[in-house]
Amino acid sequence: MHLKISKLYKQFPTKQGLLLALKDINMHVETGELVCAVGASGSGKSTLLRLIAGLDIPTGGEITVDYEPVKGPGADRGMVFQKYTLYPWMTVQRNVEFGLKLQGMPKKQRRERASYYLDVVGLTNFAKSLPKELSGGMKQRVAIARALACQPKILLMDEPFGALDVQTKEAMQLFLLDLWKRTRCTILMITHDVEEAVFLSQRVYVMTARPGTIQREIIVDLPEERTYAVKRESKFQTYKYEITDLLRGKQDLKLMTV
Ligand SMILES: Nc1ncnc2c1ncn2[C@@H]1O[C@H](COP(=O)(O)OP(=O)(O)OP(=O)(O)O)[C@@H](O)[C@H]1O
Image: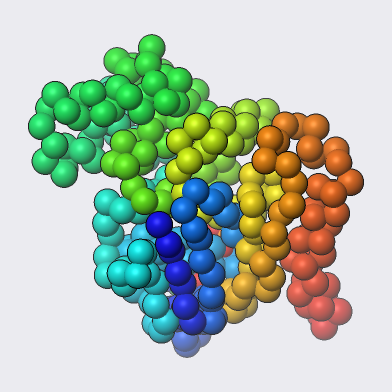
């Protein structure tokens, strides 16, 4: 798998005129990587992910998956959003099967595939439950199982843990790292949480706002085996401060001009 984004621009028409949401974005994700794009509100993170997912069209530039230009949504890219997007009237099992049903997969095969991924996310015992019977973290695990069930080349995650409380969020980060290690899936995640980006990634793209650009690519040279203890290491803190300073840079400048 090779995701490549070249000279990507996105403009939106607004009442005040054209708004440049993304400017000259260049990035890539390779097979088996877990990469985060981190940025403040308005840096164009969601816009970027929507363009990669094929839910919107760029104003300029190109996105390719395995050298094929993205022209619309496709099963090769799985999405997990911040807000739970499960169908409340369907059981957990049916929710996970839904995408496979749309693809026309026969019933027996999709039952087996969904059961497999429910096991991967540790929710076999909740297959018959309704989403309302699950905690926030469990709902996100169902959403991840649903995306993985379609066996995408890359999982695109839009602030997946943003709506969770601090403890659940930390547990879900460890869950994601463990899942990534077991399945070796390729993940591009966007987040505004610097600590989350450093904790999860091998590489971090730092985005700044107005217009949204990639200010820096940072290779996170931390042990692959990450536990909470990593967060206390001075190297972890250095990455965190470096990224926070990059994000703060523009804000300080703005404050000085007010
Ligand atoms: N459909 C749209 N029409 C007009 N402007 C838009 C549209 N979508 C996004 N924008 C603008 O583009 C910029 C980037 O928005 P985007 O939601 O991608 O940022 P973000 O980094 O994901 O922010 P947040 O973390 O708050 O979700 C913002 O200024 C936003 O107002």
